[in-house]
Amino acid sequence: MLDKTKYGWWKSAVFYQIYPKSFQDSDGDGIGDIPGIIGRLDYLAELGVDGIWLSPVCASPQADNGYDISDYRSIWPPFGTMEDMEGLISEAKKRGISIIMDMVLNHTSDEHRWFTEALKSKDNPYHDYYVWRDGEPGTPPNDMRGCFGGSAWEYVPSLGQYYFHQFAVKQPDLNWDNPRLRRELYDMIRFWVQKGVEGFRLDVIDSVAKEPDRKITARGPRLHEYIRELSANAFIEPGIVTVGEAWSADTGEAIRWSSPDGSELSMVFQFEHICLDRGEEKWDSRPFSLPKLKRCFERWQRELHGKGWNSLFLDNHDLPRAVSHWGDDGKYRVESAKLLALMLHGMEGTPYIFQGEEIGMTNIRLGLEEYEDTETLNMIAERREMGYSDAEILESVHRQSRDNARTPMQWDDSENAGFTTGTPWFAVNDNFREINVKSALSDKNSVFYFYKRLIALRKEHPVFREGDFTLLEPEDETLFAYIRAARTERLLIVCNFASEARRWRAPAGFESAPVLLANYPEPEGDLRPWEARLYLAGEGEK
Image (cartoon, rainbow, N blue to C red; front, side):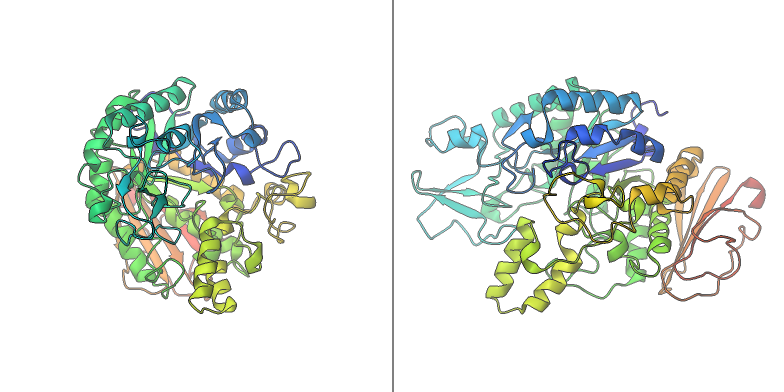
């Protein structure tokens, strides 16, 4: 078991993200909850994960599924009580699993007490907790648009002012220039640390130093000043792990965020690889290019080595399902799900598994009127106004909607996939009878047991944590192969991103190296469709 009192323990860890609303319902109301999570902790312990990234559970009107917090110090009632949360922290810790809370520090709900006070008067002390500009109705301060569509400014007639919201109208942005606000946030984080929380994932933290008058929403001039102050005042214990979500991060910024001196955060959660096949907007796509993906991963691996620390992920609550987006979710679903796991977990960084990824859950295909996500619904309305056909819109939704990741967890082949005895808050994917945990646990060749073995290997071999990175065949259109080397160990990962077999011979130094893990039986000779192998060479094979 990892010693989590020591700085850097997360470099040997694997985290598992839970989207509480869709994980496990314990009381039949159709909404996942904290007691439901507690009831599944043994499953996560069996998988071997070291921590749970828990998407927001704080009180919220749910305009953006919990990322609009109305009270940082209480639990949304459908999820349970504070006693339930304390029980989750305690029961997880007994199994060696840390709770990493998802904390939204860039904005609140418009129903938060701070904002309701801010609306009362320009002279109210809480007014300056948010970003305001004077203006006239119909003439916002500038033409900035919110990430979910529409203007980023909302007019309040009683004040004669606009407030800034980078996301939904019901998510007013906080004003980090106000030191009193920052102290309140630090005190709130300490509240959760005292309850036993061992880390925080910080939602869009690269936006807190925004300067909307200059149209700057990310990486504002005071960003690193604020993050260093946050770290010094809120993340005092050496074992606290902090993950900064930063869509704007490049490798240089990531090194500053995650410097080994611990002055800012433990690691960065960046999205460059996610955006490679997107067009000008996330809903438009570009052709997938494996060489571009390989060069992206190579740059992050090489430039952060020894200088910073990265998160490793393909899936999360904001993204489509990895096996549907990156792999083949039809004939080769199992093989490609394992390949993606091996490709990612072989790299330097801390891996994150999103609920259901470990059993190969796929995107869902619904009609336009059946989706729930506010971003998706806004896009549908906007593109209809722009003249897109419903068929064109539906293609984009099926490919990119955040709702793909938010369907209920598929536990078994019973009604509603074992998620709830009631009516689920969102549609269950109709492939649950084939793809579910019960089936995975009964099959020793399942995606689940591949993940379990991979997690165990990362703990057994320091090369995963310490090795440098060498990319092989950078321009090959279907082969992703790389070497990690550290001290007396070298590992080789090879992945065939194609539905056809291809010729393969291990490179020099690995001709006689054993295959430690593979997604096909008898892994030797040429590569089969979507085949992936891990070779491990010791000092004697060099």
